[in-house]
Image (tube, rainbow, N blue to C red; front, top):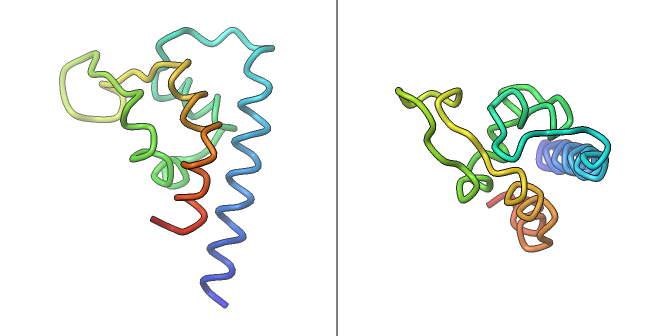
Length: 97
């Protein structure tokens, strides 16, 4: 039952993210996204939900400041869209890996 609830949550979050990514064309996001821009682009998700996607979005991340907090990094908009839309990443997420 708990695993089913987790699976439903992941499916819901994934659907929200995909709907939001499709709407990106309407908004003018910068090519390098700050942490707050990235969260807004992914549907206004909170920090906990962002944790589901953090490792998946690692290839799009680049260091642009001092420190090691999330706010010290920027993410490539083009790579984020490519990663989120890649069916292999959605499959990995479905399996909980």
